[in-house]
Image 1 (spheres, rainbow, N blue to C red):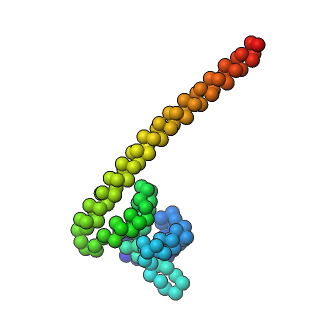
Image 2 (cartoon, rainbow, N blue to C red; image 1 turned 135 degrees about the vertical axis):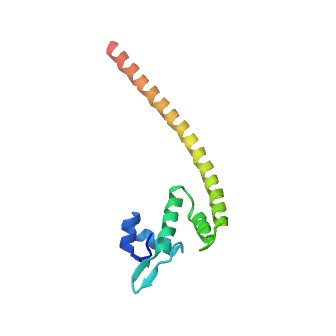
Image 3 (cartoon, helix red, strand yellow; image 1 turned 90 degrees about the vertical axis):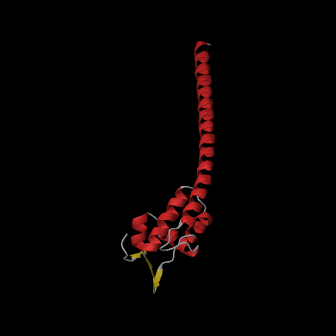
Length: 132
């Protein structure tokens, strides 16, 4: 990533988000753009943080979890604490996702069974109507 600053429009285009989303994350103190008059300018750190925010949201992390993980970052450090905390939160989220996936598979199978039963009843009703 280059060190050049990006405007809000460039950030939106690069990350596929809206200006409202960027302002929301700024209001939640997750990103810290520079202000020049009415313009927001985003640096390399903001872009890296936004990448992590969007990844965390994609995986279902709460904004508070994301904030806590971002706060553990130490510029120039090895960030072992941040990495260990991220692993812990990720393992917990993965367990939740696997449980949800299992429940979803069961619900899909149940719904498919209900559809199959309904279709069979409809076929039976149509046949008996024709022969009756």
